[in-house]
Length: 146
Image (cartoon, rainbow, N blue to C red; front, side, top):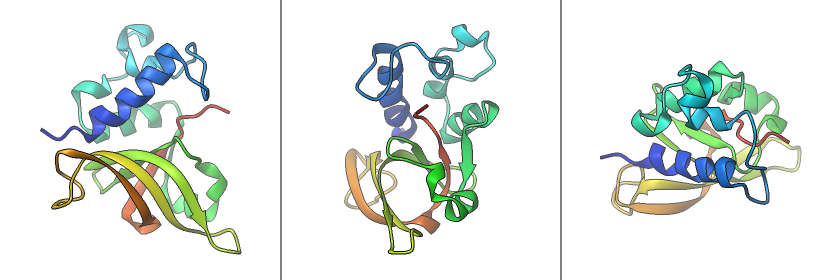
């Protein structure tokens, strides 16, 4: 089974329920990963595909399209989720935003689950991808609240 969505959501589920250096364990985002906390408004992203995760972030106004990010690169930051395809068929975590001298995004570095050497979007590995073109992405979930 494709597990990129599970991997990406599990990283942030752990961050928002346990806490880490970027986030405290008590935030409104926790409800995205625990439907009991939000009276079932969100479908649990662990049981659905990438579009379920996108939908959860859209409902709280924290999903931005690629076209908006191209116009305003400040809308994304490392830690945000990155979506591929329309409809979404792959998801990862943003590690680094690479810009040219005029501040325009050129590429992104990501870490993704369910990738592999033979097929970079469907395999059995977790991979760090460097310099992925911005046009490869469809949108972004703004996960960090700062």
